[in-house]
Length: 453
Image (cartoon, rainbow, N blue to C red; front, side, top):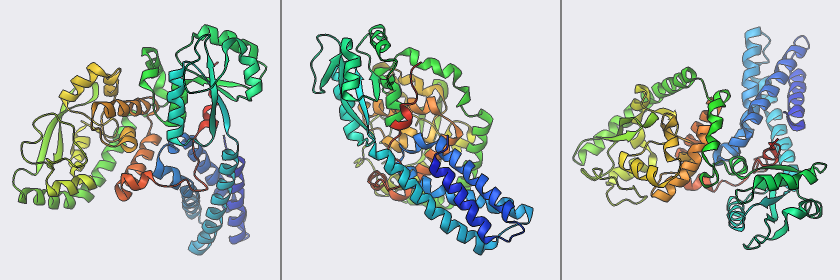
């Protein structure tokens, strides 16, 4: 669904194109430009929810729509022999990009000015965690007003606004827009209470779905085995294996050719310090099958024989290895794993066998991340960084499950763009990117439309 701002941008770009083009071809160029802008806006809107969780993509995505649409328009017009010339397209780009940023800023400002009022239905402890996560994520378009409690459950720091028997009165009094359901109260009792609110403008959703939309992860503690039933019908979002493999091979080949001189020089630098340049290690891949992963060696010889979590300032790392790890050059040999089919460009990061055995025994659903091929980068990798403990691995699992559910070629492209941004800027710099006036803060407005039937 397109916003009024997107439609205005498309017609404004079309009008500018018609103005700078010759009278003979004004109508054709305007129509092509308008169509390109509408298609670009539809593509951007389709991935706005995932883009809002990636700091780099969130800021640059609105800036890419106008150039992308105009490049498409110029290519189509050029094939038809009705081009404007470089000067004409530049004028359209300046006008269209400026209007796009201004209108996007106006739309975002309108969204931020209306904070959706949320009530949580569940236990006090779950409500406390939700309030803490909303505060930590600095969600700007929603506010947790309070909690709807079961009789006798009045504990916890989040204010109790009512019990289930008085739900309708509290919804009206507190002007609640959205109810979020936790696991602490029987669904039969909840839906009995909701029957009294059917005439109200009230939306509701499960806590796990709320986390997926607002935080970009799946709360593993809030789901059960039934959550995975959606994977049986996830073909609509699952990319074609052939298309994903084609993307993996084509991008890996290009990157391998570009990176070959860097890998050769880096390998020589590692060799100067003594020991082999390439480090190999058995990791767990798709379906739980082991494979041999390749990296440039960054630690002293023999340091990787035992399964120990790597740290930011790991004392086992060599001076050359610190630079290779900071720039991620040490990961480049894994392009060979991608070409071999052991890995994909995007997916959950593969772990060592000892870690997998321990985590599968202690972290619920950990083995589910092996449903798909591991990746050189991934949704969890760009959002969480490297795992340095069992606890951080559990947190990364929440993000891996999100990718397993929503995986697609479009999401892969977003992750690849975010990865490039993180490599260029560094994770600490990227995490401090401020919300520009045109960057959408979070997708709660869209999340609330996904109601439970």
